[in-house]
Length: 138
Image: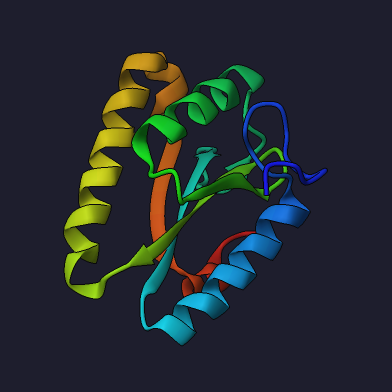
């Protein structure tokens, strides 16, 4: 998979490839009975709308995600330049809530160390099921 042209140097897939992987993993999870969740990291403005992410923040988030996720999870752009996503693969329902809670806490802690207070102030970390993505700003 890493040989695909949509795989960036920073280890993240571009939006087109990431959305393709997300769709495939969603279909696979339905067949297998395991869950697929999507972690989204984005910056908001005072009105709560997602905005373009500063390149420094992008670098820090992209570096923090592999340290917080499993090797089987995919990292890429859900919305180019604005929303970084991670497809959390093969989750077992009974263990999903504690695993997701632990992941969010760990990623938040890493980013609080890596980013300034002002940089992390507007940063949002959200985990949702694939059908909940419809409410996410395009």
